Length: 352
Ligand code: PHE
Image (cartoon, rainbow, N blue to C red; front, side):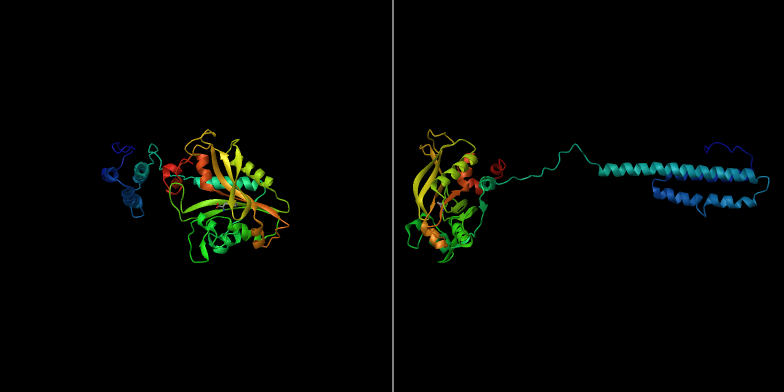
């Protein structure tokens, strides 16, 4: 019922005006209710237990009998009107409140997302894993040894006594007379032979330290040692294994050559070269014009080393090899400065 519409039935002017007045007041107050709280106050004021309209309904008995039905109907009509209007107003206010909330919490999906750098595997670790995978696929185990090592394992047991000139080949960080930072992974050969009986074949990856720093040397770098011992291991086993390795790690049909060399712990010893992968063997800055690049050292285990490790040198033969992981990584990815690996320049690392 619209507030301006006159009631459809006859009532004494006074009562009718009274109710009409209540309704008009309600309409004004409702229009001014700006929040759900205001609305609740209005509801209580008119429809609550002690509300204005409730009181009117209660006064039904005081109205003359003839007027009672019309009065009751009018009060009820106004009651329903107030209920409907407050409900509608409530829906409207809730809607506004929700809109406000949505606007303040809105996600702007047109904004660019926050970028989280995912990081990547360091090139050294990447190549190290490749090296390990190749040897593991050929049946080699993995062994590790301490980086802080005894002079005995790093030198003595590898047939490098205290006054041996070969000690000068490796600038050593000494901790005291007997303890040092291992200069190569070869001590792991001895440590494993002391613990295990042949046949054995393993690689020993890890960090090594030398007191040296320039374009091609860093005080710490990585090596992978290899050792295979049994009753009849020959130089051709060494050649075969290393040729397979070199061809798999460089992913090409690279030529491989064994060049005579010297290590106190192997006899005979060899250095393994591959055809320069940068110039293809014609000669360049990297291979210094020779067409060949050295990638690792190797040889047949010196019987003196077997003796010191407790193996019978007449019963067993074996081969050993050692390679620098940085060197192989530099060749694989044509990196010409070793220091790049350790500078943590994100522009360099991101490329891997
Ligand atoms: N330990 C040697 C080096 O660091 C490499 C090597 C290992 C050579 C095993 C022969 C056999 O230069």
